[in-house]
Image 1 (cartoon, protein in one colour):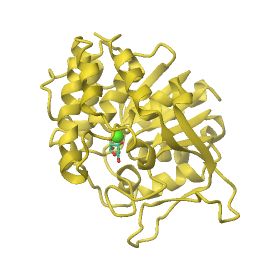
Image 2 (tube, rainbow, N blue to C red):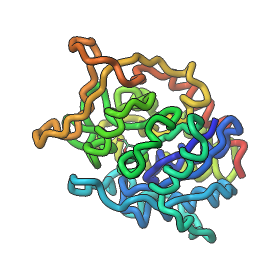
Image 3 (tube, rainbow, N blue to C red):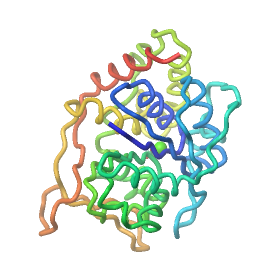
Length: 307
Ligand code: RIB
Ligand code: CA
């Protein structure tokens, strides 16, 4: 399976990158980086660091630094100032490609029609702009599998999840498109808490990448303990990659999803017709449940394959 991973590293993004690079079932054509958890300069540097840690030569592309219309928000509260606080990682020795992420997405989909899965796990500005800059790619994207939104409450406003709230207009372009789309929202990612036994299992692999992943999770959990009283952090972004590898770990329903772009307290909410009370045609496979223990066993097993 050919994929493009669009991310804003970010602790959970970093584990999504590791899981993707550790899985031979996936051909990672490129990693595109967006602003999000922190500014683009840091999210890009973090992606370069994680690539190097994983011993990979996958190309990395810098995306856009700002949302389309909304004011930029960021999540230093969760990820620290660098966006990847916790472990000390060496500065990358290789930089990003000169091609811009939006152009890479367009070129890659045109080169591989109906073969590319695009995996946004941050704000969706890069993907939305690619769709707008070259509408021809829309019918040629095989599928979109994203982390964002929720069937329930938000985590950055009472109504909106962070990735969607960063750029609701971009998210609406994506959900309104005819591309087959699968959504992993907070309603399912908060079922996947990295509990002490899960972090310990990763640590016991003993390889450098697993030890860094465990350190990242130890830092990531601080915000979840403080805000939610959780015993571990919700491991959002790797759900997207795990689904590509083991769809059987998840329960999904085909539902209608819209994005609220009105300037009200619900700005950025994913409005999911869970009870199908409207006449709207379903447009998204929405994840509702995950087998959390099997999810973390998959992550530990795959991360052991890395340097
Ligand atoms: O709300 C969780 C999402 O926001 C995750 O993708 C996390 O990395 C942040 O981007
Ligand atoms: Ca993310």
